[in-house]
Image 1 (tube, helix red, strand yellow):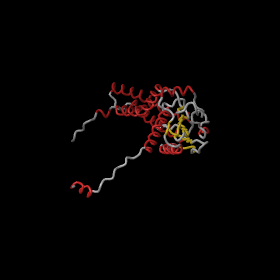
Image 2 (cartoon, rainbow, N blue to C red):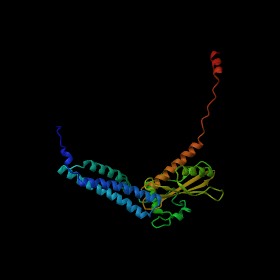
Image 3 (cartoon, one colour):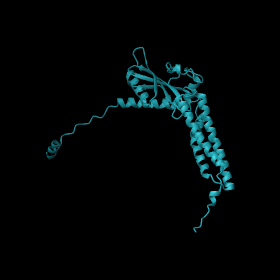
Image 4 (cartoon, one colour):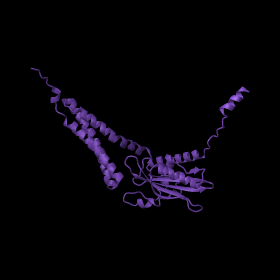
Length: 284
């Protein structure tokens, strides 16, 4: 008869703490995804969505604690479940990595939510003002001189854009860039000289959670050239973690690049002589 060999390691029980750590980690992922869907599709108000999100982060943190306890138990009694512990810790690290980065940004960046190239006379939210009247939303009125001073210290490069193109062309370039970014255009009014200036109002979304941030772009003539002022403000929260400044800076850079490329004259190539003519010239 063939002899059967027992596998002692199979008789060791799986650590219940390891199983709990894994399950909590998986639940935190599901809760994070649900909170993102709630915000992006407007299923619930902002407060329940944030409560779901922070609850998910709390589950991930609890999973780490339970995983460490499971690791200690496995080390002492030799039970199985180390794979579950490692999986839980990996999931928790993925869930908490981006919020941890945002926490560092919160400590590093100024507590502002309204950024503009012209703090003295910022572009107004007109059509967008109707969307900023709900509970918990920030006012459509500019945040004020304190915010302007904080912006100047943190983002001195954000200034009015001066373009060497007519105001109509500047408006067209700005609208093309807004469309390219897939921002939701709420209102657009092309300039009509001499009185009406160009204006674009649109809504952008933050990359992960999809929080709404409102943009107003004003295009005014400056002789034969034009001036573009931009304002970007978070609809919720009193700290944007640098998202509005980053958006305005990228738009300024793209405006300058687009106009510079359009104004650049292509190099004129001299026509080359036909091959036969060149050959005859060589013989001479």
